[in-house]
Image (cartoon, helix red, strand yellow):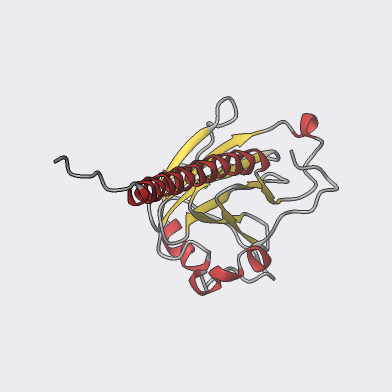
Length: 204
């Protein structure tokens, strides 16, 4: 869990430089982080936020404290979450852009990472390009060591599982190559043996 002394793994301006060309160009001014609305005025307001012309859910997601809420987001889809201190948005697949009410910075969160909210305030989660899967959950800050600020952290548990899967696949691939090479050596050895055998004399 993130702690007060732990630096975030990355923010929009540092963590995903390769995605600069697809990032929204109409982000709120950092001088005036404005409000995030939902309902009839949301679509118009989103022209000034990261979500661009995306369609945002009218009812913000709030029922995730007892049990994590898994969301499947289509391309260019955006959802709003009533975040509290301790709210986490983990990205299981894809790439999302997160804007939080009152925060002058945006966050790009890739698969294997999670956004952690350091204070109360509605957030908007929108996909960048392709579809994405996210899980919204909540951790009691008193038990996790506290959230000094909002930020993005690596999901080390998921990364460890991905590394373990990669090692298994690598071992399987190497094993297949070794079996293929061994079969080839055996075929060459048999051919060499057959060539060395003297011809059988014809019976008179």
